Image 1 (tube, rainbow, N blue to C red):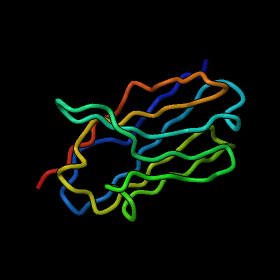
Image 2: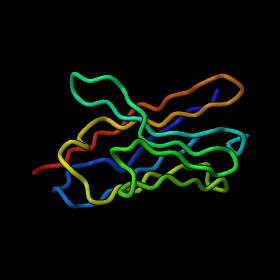
Image 3: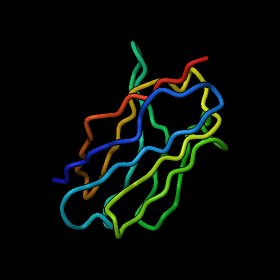
Image 4: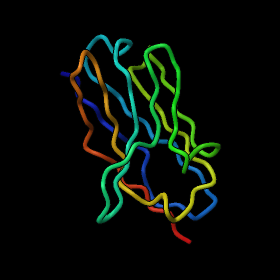
Length: 115
């Protein structure tokens, strides 16, 4: 099971940008499908973006055109570049790794967007 550590969250004004990072421990990072999810206060956790082993990406409609997911296999890291942030993007952002039907989650990083 891989261990994930997120970083890069913080407080930003609406219209600003943040880049989240998620670094995985151990080997075989290249064989993990990776994703970012978020959970706002009182809301269910929802998908933000995913990236497959081959680099194909998928985004929630609410973030298309504003967020970009990418991965650096040499650094065991997946990124989420977030631009044009809105107050409704405020949430705890979680990293997820999937391999052979097994999922691992990070501890989350808080993103707060002020209006």
